Image (cartoon, rainbow, N blue to C red; front, side, top):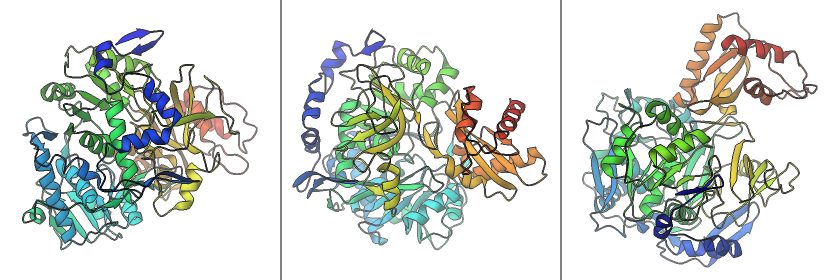
Length: 635
């Protein structure tokens, strides 16, 4: 890699070995984006080729109509006789034996589980809940659902029973796949106990339990052991042939209101985009060992921990623990031992490791690509990641995308560049971004505005919000009309066409790269009988990027420390550890407009020290002094 004018460019050696090493691909895609995606689609195995490539009926769109496929055939059937390693499983404890699963073994294991699900009555188009830690059975579960045409609905294993319940109620799953328990870092999680609580008042009739923690569990007539139900099943299971636009999976993400929304992705387009983005952005080849540290409960875990590396014939590394336990250099030891070639993680992890490891001396020679995901990465962390971990030889692909986009849509390509610290990079070929002002006028370079995507939209993008067409229209295709996808992010681009993401335009905060809506947090807090009203905002955090703080108005004379503790406990119970509050402020009032809208931007500005601007629109400007006083007390 070499640096010029504040930007980094790939070396000749990197460029020569890359799938793409010239500007030609960008010009080709710009001239005919539909043809660009058609060419990518031909790298997937289809039972029947599509008749129509792209149809746009705003706000809806479809790709590869008439095409028939099953995503698993593109890597399971293709490699069913291969002894090449598909999955390297690194358990939480470094003392526990690791597992290597070949493509041949993966094919057989997935087929056994697919047959077991079918025997339990799971059918094409039905949804199956998955509430599992980062263990191989989680991947088997995803692929078995895909194999038989069932929609998987994964819930992050750190989410609380209440969060699980809300999602299972919405998706209507009859079967939930979970585990008895598991260890993460130094903590043991009784997952089955949480699942038992979470399926109350849902349609779940059967629970498949993976034996992982070996803890005592309550076993009821609903429960079956995973190892028992697959024991006698055949290692062959014909793949269910899907239409390109058949639903593939539902994944719940925080929106700007309290209830999580089920983002729906389609079979054909998702497969095409998952393979293409992994191949071009991480330069994935069959010889690669790819480690995405993302949990399968998030979209990064779906696309880049599981589907993309398998579609590209690579070896994926699945890690159950955290990168700094039991020692801060745990991630480095794993990279060294398994010769990881591409390492994809969140800025939160980079900041944490930078703080704990500093100038560590390992060479990590196997690495050739670094990646960042989940939130904008600050310059100091970018430079540390590039220089100390990548030794200034590895392209660092900073990636922008969303649960809704299904895969990465913005990142410079490693064989082309350029790479600029704090900038996500260039739009992926075949994707058209613009920056608009509030009236929908296109902004010039270096002017901040709303980031939008124009048609033809990438084939892996969402096809709807599960059972909520109104939410789909309102959230994504109402701000600038039905032909413009509204990302809810603010951004700008420089003269080179590199984009920098500035932040969120809606009421969503990014905690360690994970989206949490202020509405969902506020709904949970408001269930406390002593809380009259509350507001949650995200503030800058050195490690997590953003952390939530809550302002609450109480109607009781309860001791403030007791109330703060109860609020934190309630939020932990309703959502889980990811929603841990950095601070709770008990205030007499919240700043509101005359129409009653809570002005969260004012609260954020008090923390950042920015000028508060015009307060004349507030119905209660005196509330601002109360906020300032409480914040000062807490510092």
